[in-house]
Amino acid sequence: MPFSSHDATLAEIKDAVAGKIVVDAVVPLVPPRVSVVQLPPQGSAAQIAQAALGDGVRVVSAFHNVGAAKLQAGGPVDCDVLVFSNDRAARDTVIALADAAGTRGIDGGALANSVAGEALTSILIGINRRYKVDCAGIRITGIVGSASK
Image (tube, rainbow, N blue to C red; front, side, top):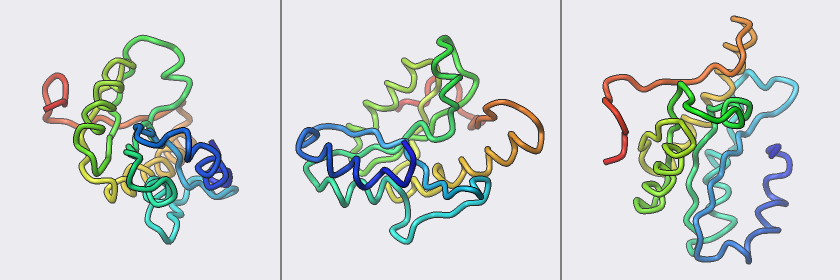
């Protein structure tokens, strides 16, 4: 979903997601300079989502750095997914979802840390362009097997 539609979408789903986990994969890209990090004053799209949806919704920020084409291809994806949330159980649920999707979920900590994952997307877009590759991803080294705790 484009960042420009984020607020309207959050308002539209607010009542339907009460008491649920919402996975926010939105990145605050501002065309035409999408390979330059441009974070919002509120910190991150995920922090905006949590504020808009309220405490009754468990916002988890994830899947920013995995190309949709990689996920849609099925099978293992050679990259990691950083997962952020203030709710540990929700974070663990989305880590398991990332693992089931063929990636490796990595616990990135609190929702405030999602600024790093969101910002990394712009850097990966620039890497894709400079190195003429499709869907560059990230890998956290030093963790053997599943990153779930």
